[in-house]
Length: 117
Image (cartoon, rainbow, N blue to C red; front, top):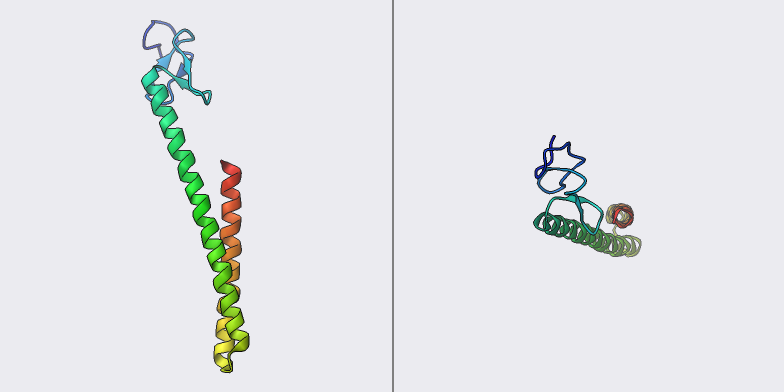
């Protein structure tokens, strides 16, 4: 692959448009990625911002799900212990334990998302 501006062998490829770049044409984004122009640098920066915001929202959603599951699990377990209907006791306690397990899963997922960002 040749450089888009010079007839020499390309040393890198723009992360946005895929054009070949020689060592004289290479520009770096703030995150140290290769780009061929200010427009491509801007596009790469915007894309990285969107990805970062999406990961943050995903983490927050998982935490909300975890806390909601913990609360519902506790309510189901409490109701299971204080109800007088034996068939209902087993069902509500089982659902409560399942909700607590689901909360733990969401909590783990949120923690792993925060390590990625």
